[in-house]
Image (cartoon, rainbow, N blue to C red):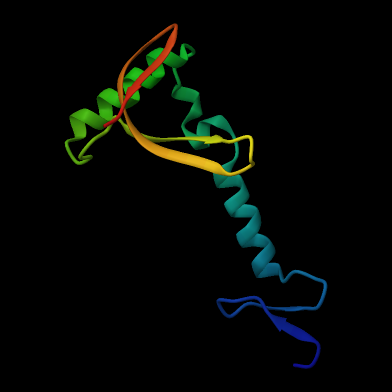
Length: 102
């Protein structure tokens, strides 16, 4: 099949074009990923702090996450190099988040 390029998973297409199979798969995947009703965003609390509390509570209740309040905080120094440290979330309110670390 001269002039064709493999697109993976047994789908072949002509150079510069998309096969019908690849187009259908791409269109289906795009439909699955778009819209708030498909991504779960429709159920978000309009108050971001209440939503965050719900997420943390769910993670703690699941019992499968060793430390649900652990997170990475990153910043960029004046020299342009990133700095990252793992911290624990102690508390949060409308003023912001309180972290601690050893």
